[in-house]
Amino acid sequence: MSADFKTPFRYTGISQEEADFLTHHYQQRGYRMKKYLNEDVRLWDVVVSLPETARFPKTPFSMLNPLWR
Figure: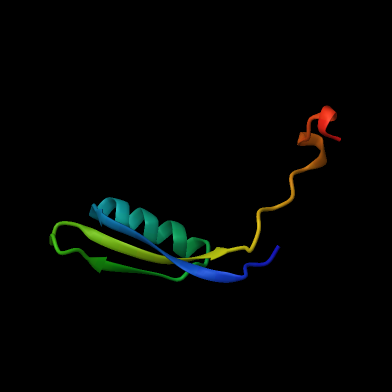
């Protein structure tokens, strides 16, 4: 399943520890992200571009109720 487009997702007003965790997490997975200092200089904002798809993946056949088949 391929991603049709990327949508920016913003975490605002998070601590240094949370920002470092998100930075590490997203960089390991290859996502483009940036970390900015918040208006409150003790907090950070993180913006990451996450892939989206046009539709949800198909439900596996084994998860369907037998009455629905």
